[in-house]
Image (cartoon, rainbow, N blue to C red; front, side, top):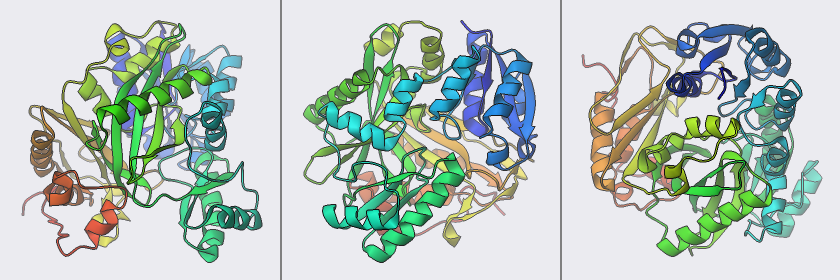
Length: 461
């Protein structure tokens, strides 16, 4: 097992990895930007090294600075978390050349699947259905127009790297296609350092279903069920649940087998997620693979009774999958709400600033993954996610009621958060009955029944 691990990330995921390391008896080294000097991951790691100013391009995306910190800290492994360099094959190769273990898939598998365009090619070769789209990277707007005319509008422009809804634009005509093409490239370059994009057919109001894959270096590859991530706003996941109400046992079996087949075809090792769209006729299409731990890995952990971050570390150390992972048994239902520092009453305007009061909910079946605390200042430089609230119950109905209760207990003062928005969704009849797809949020916010209660998630006057 490793003696010391560097966490090449920030916020709640960095804290999540630190906690797993502590339970495994592994020392941790945090890296941080000047904006994160007071972050909890810096305070709770065994050691911490500043790697640059606030912009991620000058800190968390700087491979040379991270590797310098790794050498100074004498670590034997690096966990990239999600985002930033987590799906950067070159970073994995640099780690290998420096004799430091990258806690993730091999660079070869990352190149095959981390690049979304290459992943589509791999899926085709493995016989897994994909959405119609471009044959490769689209270099310019004229080529984009040709592709769109061939497959028909509407289309989706997508960055080949990264995730989290960044570098994605829907286009319904040539004007929006040209605007979206340049916008997606600029956003992708800023977020991931890679501007390349491809185009695929936009399926209207599907379900977004993803399968959790875990594979070791001894030939064992399994999936731990699916997560329904269809509650989205601007292509960014908002609420996730496990398992999905949509899938029949037959669909679950077919999609799970397809996910395993594709992972094995590229020699995938470690944790990863196969993402699919399921249309209104029940047809499924592979869209991409996230070659890293997911933001929503929490609900799979709660439903299947596993620790995916520990599993990642064990796999990277050369161990076999844990017995309960090889033969996974779902035991409950789980829902996650992403709590962001945004004001839903003002079109989700970012709300960076100082938290003057913070109280997280608790009680049976509630989990909170957060780096926030009283007097913590949310920096404006990064993603606005400040917490993940997870509710677990024996049934979906009990899980929703538990989430409603927890959202009512979650008190954050000094900034605006999306807690009232999540509470409104938990009250919504369609959501409670499982009648939703990727178009749910837009329909819900434009409906007569949409109502925010600003008092939720705030201190009482």
